[in-house]
Amino acid sequence: DAGVIQSPRHEVTEMGQEVTLRCKPISGHNSLFWYRQTMMRGLELLIYFNNNVPIDDSGMPEDRFSAKMPNASFSTLKIQPSEPRDSAVYFCASSRLTGTDNEAFFGQGTRLTVV
Amino acid sequence: GDSVTQMEGPVTLSEEAFLTINCTYTATGYPSLFWYVQYPGEGLQLLLKATKADDKGSNKGFEATYRKETTSFHLEKGSVQVSDSAVYFCALSEAGKSTFGDGTTLTVKP
Image (cartoon, rainbow over all chains, first blue to last red; front, side, top):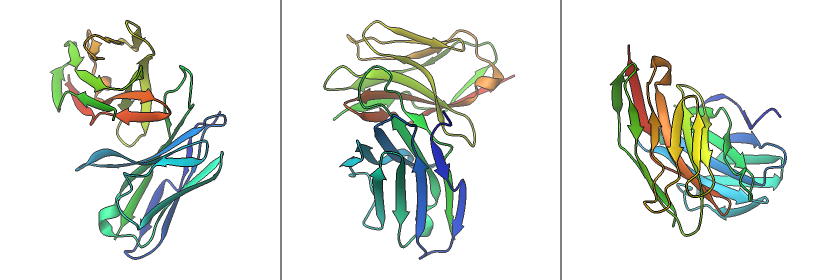
């Protein structure tokens, strides 16, 4: 398996623009997580899905952030409009919902810079 | 809700020193426990895991034992190398949700 695939790897955008981050989870995994990592705040859980359904979005900073999972093999995280303080590395991770093989597998991340 | 508390860093050691990074957790049920490692510029990678009480996870010389009575999962290595320099995250998984600690930065000097 190719692992969790995120795109793009790097994104530089101007303040006010819309940004869409993409994630393809590992086939057969039914939990998907979006994280944000910064030096100041560390690793933050933004939202997670079980079986394509959003379970907890309490970590989403504000209404400018939205996430969707239209099917088991694709998820997006959208920021509209983007602001400089959104600059961070965004990670997607997937795991199995049940059983003992339930560790999270992380993508390589998307490094977002908003100027 | 579930939570993970791990030893604050940064931790700086000399090569071949003994490493311990403490981790304790709070959970409502019986979670699986993990240690992840993050090298610069990369995502988190699973280092080791334990799925039930008294299990010992091990990998690359690192070990951690699932202690239900003390709700702990401390990471240890007998002799660290410069290549072990990274950020280490303790985590648990329960009911489809993974919860991570804040991470501990380890620097090993030659």
